[in-house]
Image (cartoon, rainbow, N blue to C red; front, side, top):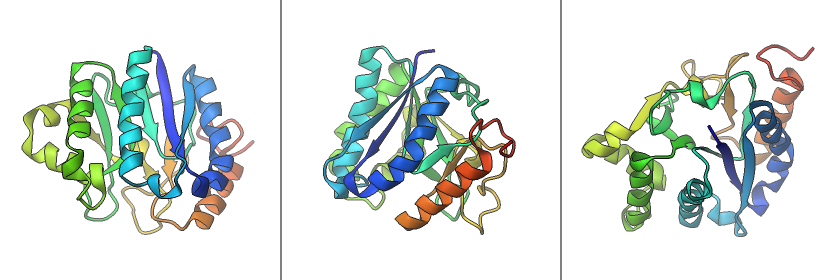
Length: 218
């Protein structure tokens, strides 16, 4: 399956991207995927309306280019087990989103698998068309997607919700359901100041690289 790993970065996050992007490229090379980074010129747009729009349009453009599967992920993640494949996560599901398993909030939209087909394309266009709705919401598309999962049957049929540790483990110390463990696929440095994200990413790379086979550094 022709697969693209797609992320984006802004000037504010360039120092983090300098740490994490080599890992993204290494995972893509290990699995025969491609990895790209969208450049968001305005730092405030990374987590804002323009960034959300760029993410959705980026996935649609990848489909039009011939990619059959797109993982959109934040620049604040590392692939910590390169033996794992995207195809093994909820196979056959058009869209795959991880539960947050952190506090009360039900899902995290910063790591999402999109698989080309009518269901995924329909949802991407629906989210773009609904910008006047989600632009007013806290957490933007993430909040709107959860609302759609509860109220729209087509969205509920298209989206598979998987446990956080399937593809969105965290570095949060008080989150037993999502806390990263050796062998997990992805660690996401959410809810951390930028400098802490950089320090933690470097520590994880030192612990698990350069082979990222689910074991400690050899």
